[in-house]
Image 1 (cartoon, helix red, strand yellow):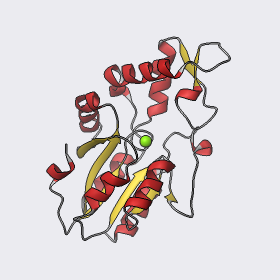
Image 2 (cartoon, rainbow, N blue to C red; image 1 turned 90 degrees about the vertical axis):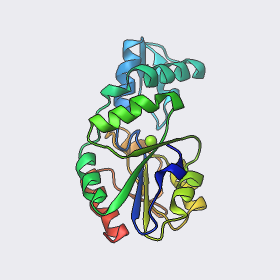
Image 3 (cartoon, rainbow, N blue to C red; image 1 turned 120 degrees about the vertical axis):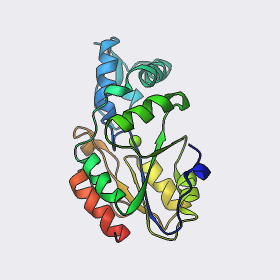
Image 4 (cartoon, rainbow, N blue to C red; image 1 turned 45 degrees about the vertical axis):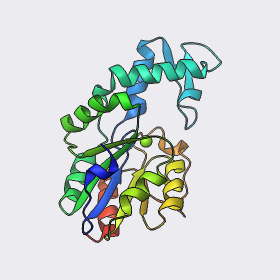
Length: 210
Ligand SMILES: [Mg+2]
């Protein structure tokens, strides 16, 4: 969906939420997929392709192989991704008094699979597929909104991009996978961090004043 097609209301609070590693346990699913293809994902750092090895090898697989595997995963397998605990209930609560929009950086061809995954998991919100740092897209959504806006992502680069492009938007970092949490670069002085949706939901509601 294009941002203009969302028809966002001026007088409704807005919550913009990422998918992978915020709503979906992406690394867990990608790791199983990679394993079945003869690879292993070693969670040694907060990165994807640098952690990917052909099984048993000491040197990380070439980036091109990682990208091919990533695209194949998006084309075939993302439907089995588990949803982050508490996310469905938290967004259900927020959706009572705010508009919820999903903003994901995923291959454009993954739209049907992503839409189905969201619907099947109880996350029936409008989906915008973007690419690159998310600041410009969030600024475009927030531009016509006179009520508070919140943005949730796992990646510092996206949170910083939003801070620059739309500084009035309330930013929340959240990392769903418990193994990744200690590795995720974080900046609590710039972006609030709540990895657990049972805490994140109320924190967003408090910021939005809803
Ligand atoms: Mg993400």
